[in-house]
Length: 366
Image (tube, rainbow, N blue to C red):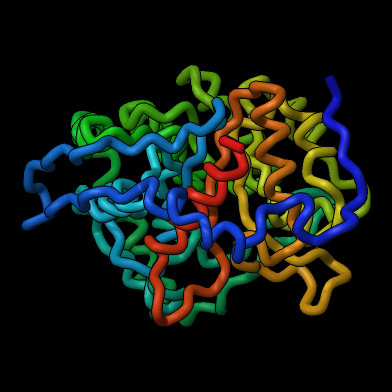
């Protein structure tokens, strides 16, 4: 059955309005969890009084840990945020787990922001464009010779640390999460420009964490590089899009043809914000090759301001229709919150992600 969508007649017809949603006190209280107490890193974790469950109407709602980038990082803290927000499945960013396990600190991290989206090894040069038609990724500031030497030294240190780390350490992290009721479905290592040994490490580590695959930004070379490793380990290489769909001629098809182990992490928000097209057009066509979807609210490309992150329910992105399509078709696609709108001083990322969870729950359990 094909999902039908109609043009919006009312801005609130396709989305639950935030005003109405926040007035639903029963929903707001649905995930009142007891936070875990972390006396010190490595302390045994007490199981929460009620384990989180963010599967609603058959749809698994999760989050990428980038949503909590404004807060202290580390796997133990990420787990605490999951419990507090009611999240039971996550896309874990590798910097959080590697930091927790004692990885050398990247001396360049402060230069690129407190908690960058692309963790760990940072190349000195910008990557090549994703395809001939797709826009090139943003470039980093040019490094001085001293900075390049510092980065090269760090890259050697982190490689040695990774290759010496027993996989049992990741199994312990997996147990810590699973015991608390949280699964790790994918890990964002972004390893396509690492050495072969480190790429192999990334897939081994993701498997030890219980994940089904490793996430990376989409690009021709990245897909070709990671696909053989995914096949070797019986896992997926999963690729995330930004605004490539706004470029004429861009398609998933060339990437998907490389290997059946190639899957997509479809960012519905970036797609809508840059094209103005309904995300369900892509989801319906490629649902069998989409492992997960990043969910966020945005304005469209013709709005003022255009393509701008919004509080859920205040933008134009058809959040409800995306979630209900997954529910109606019973597709096993993870729907992950990516909190990107500005968090006000009187709130924090944990509170906002919890509000997003409850918003999704309200849509899916209507």
